[in-house]
Image (tube, rainbow, N blue to C red; front, side, top):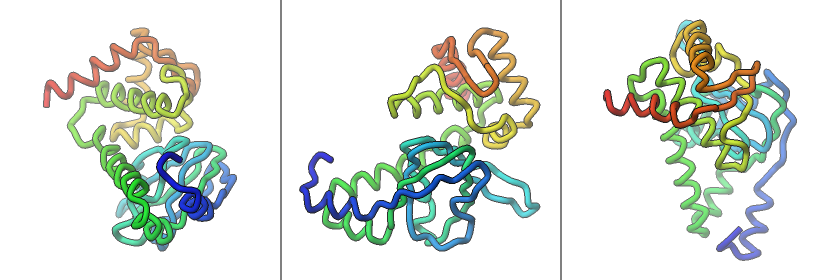
Length: 217
């Protein structure tokens, strides 16, 4: 890692535990458990969610390889949500108290932590505005595309590990609405849907659709 001396790298290395695999449906942590560590997803996809007062699941997000889970537990010192594996997941688990102590001596590490926290806050942007259903789906697909692309994967061809119902829940729409929007995008040749594989045929069209909400805000 650029800017770190060998001693600092050695200290950072011993903080990391490789954990997993977690299999589909297995919990990584549950809401209310004491916060001890953050974790970077090495492989697989993790869903975070809460249960509302009626016991209904509300999906908060999906974490892809290279992304960090547990950051939203820093303030309250307990995990405020559940995290569950959607497929076979492996993690790099990092003790947060020890990481925080090390960050006080490594400004670049501290800056990286602030950057991760900023990205966590930004994830809510898709849901913060009053998007129409089609625009919300376009923004979601573009967001997944950009996140895969940043990690060296294809921006235009990827699998959606999550179910249609989970996507609909996250986007705050009915499952049948999500299916209808995806079918319309497919019929219009904007995307190609092959079971869980999505191919973006016209990403520029998706970008135009997502941008319409900004114009209407």
